[in-house]
Image (cartoon, rainbow, N blue to C red; front, side, top):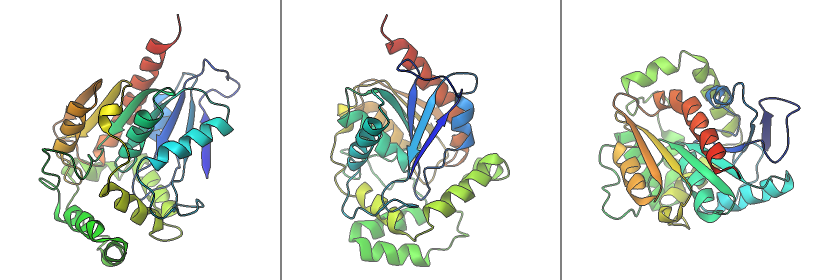
Length: 276
């Protein structure tokens, strides 16, 4: 399913910025409130979609992370969109980077919050600082779909060991309501989308982050135990035009309060790259 939201209905045209949102794992393409608030008072079109295996989207077994770029390319063509920015959080981060690396002529800027680095990232101790629940999930993924599905099926939904203290307060606000709705929608047909995502994360991504030529903002919580800060630091060193914003106390969920600011950053980069 494709989701489209115009912040100022009635305003359209090639001069209106377009931002593609890439949802996390496991979620759906339902746009989070902080993304929408980031465009408040400015003309911007937000587009998102359910990745294969999520919601009403058909599964695509064996897809790699780069497959997201082909999906976005097709969606943009269908909606008659030329250039756009991309934004992703958590499991959506690698997919946003894929678009920037593969669709270089179309992507003006990229924003990522709490994004994983490639599983084979040279010089990165990938599991260092990760909570036991995350280590167990990705270790199962590295053994294949059968082991991963078995792990996800028996995982304790009340296991909060990967959340920082700052994360828990976020669940009480509007973001918590969205997270429940988005996750429920993403898992409405089972674990297929989550399995496909996790398998893609631990296999070759199909692109090199060094090929991300657009301006990139990487936002990362220093207390994140699901995606340790070293992942963002590795990506920032690899992407040629990346900026890293590391917040000391944010975890994997509380980092989403920086979504609106990241949207504003993307829109500013859009203005910077507009023809004179």
